[in-house]
Length: 350
Ligand SMILES: Nc1nc2c(c(=O)[nH]1)N[C@H]1C(S)=C(S)[C@@H](COP(=O)(O)O)O[C@H]1N2
Ligand SMILES: [Mo]
Image 1 (cartoon, rainbow, N blue to C red):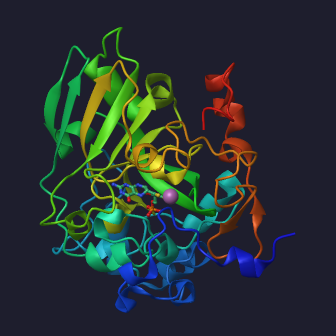
Image 2 (tube, rainbow, N blue to C red; image 1 turned 120 degrees about the vertical axis):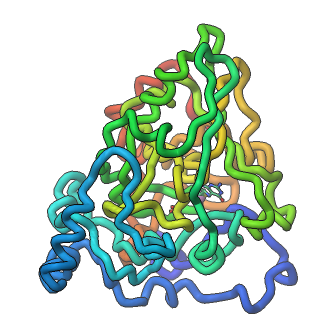
């Protein structure tokens, strides 16, 4: 049996030679995990009650609604701070029952990130993405569809009903979280675009702007980051575009202003800071599948039976927990999604 010691060794998606890593970048993981859990799920209700009533009223009036949440401060960065003084508009301690697993504290969700555009270490995105300005923002929809378009973020989002969804997020590196996302079904924008009969996939592209995304100045990956889904996966009701988490706008480090969330797939499919959606007939060439084809496939469905070439996928370290959990097929969503892959050899089609 694997020990908890082993579980504390991170397994990076890229292996870098030690001399590639400036010592200033090396911050032990426990520094992030041991920070005070200011916005832990269990504490959220109590913390809300402790706020002055004027502030409380203000937060409640910033309730879920179509369009983005303007509850953040003038800098636009408050929601990105691990110790954000504002609090979500609902009692997140109740939300845990929806999935029957505790929410990962806000601080962990927003300080332990993978976002190579802002650095390759878990603590890099929260430090290096603070000044990123995610607005104004626009999204291009093109490729094989009857209604291509170029949308301002607000116009892209407004027709949809924004809702909160609690999902597990399982990274291919064998750690996981439980995140209360805010967003809307990807299917909404797909239907609006009216994909042609020949369209079989949808490709997503992250912003390419090395001025604003310092990680893109280094050739760690082939920028911009590209991901893709088969059209039926993209239309599945579990697949969402997230605009927020914990009832607030997405912090920059989590992919502001808009990122994909596909809960039954490894986290790298959930592409951040999307600027383009393109309908294609051919399977898109996606960033990780191109970078290391024998380690990261296009489908990337969570599967405890298929080991990563460099580590087992049988278990995972839930951030904030000491003991490792068993990884579930399709990350626990098999009942909803397994039928999408009927007849496919999931070992071959990683
Ligand atoms: N553009 C972009 N999107 C990305 C990544 C990235 O490096 N760049 N990392 C992916 C990986 S590996 C994971 S596990 C999730 C992490 O999301 P989180 O930081 O919000 O937990 O984002 C995914 N989306
Ligand atoms: Mo990941």
